[in-house]
Image 1 (cartoon, rainbow, N blue to C red):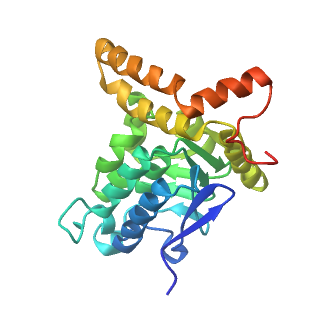
Image 2: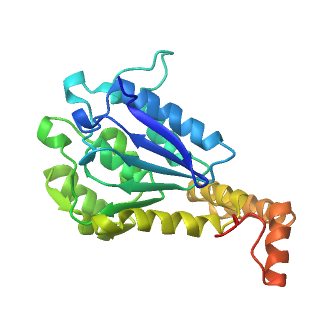
Image 3: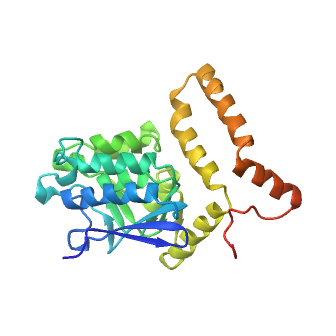
Length: 260
């Protein structure tokens, strides 16, 4: 039986692929458990500078495993901790590495939560999305924590309450996705985004990810106190010194892979 989530290192990226097309990559307990493991693996993988999340089949992710009673979004982990979907989406959001969503198919419910947890979601222009929970007598409870950090309250209200479908372009306008492209241009757009990120300092990217999660929770005074020490450490770091030296010498920094 095929693994529900595939993992591959490719061109300095950790590719994580939802691989359960027979049920439209629904968030079963098995899929969510393995997804959480793969995200942890990618976040700790020294050879991976970023994460690409994608799926197999015509659906990126259909959301909760309804035939499994909610699957990985409901069932507690074997160690009694959070359900595996919570672990997966939280760790995706908190990953120290940039996360690029290669969204090849439609997404509903929890699948949109995974998209919201990506830093850059790039999707095909013909796709359709919906928060379908309300039409099933449910609510987008878990994913709202991440979706509402991307979408404005008015947009979330409209689509959470109605369950109406919306287009890829509408998702882009609502900041839920970063870029919309024709199907034949999807891989090129993902590759271009990855290449651009490879030009950035790996440690700097991790620091920026931490900044994006931490600073909004701080007061102005707390933020400045935190930032002052962080700023000094980065300017004095090996990577910071290399970046400034490369700028002065008009050359590429050492962290840029050959040929990029």
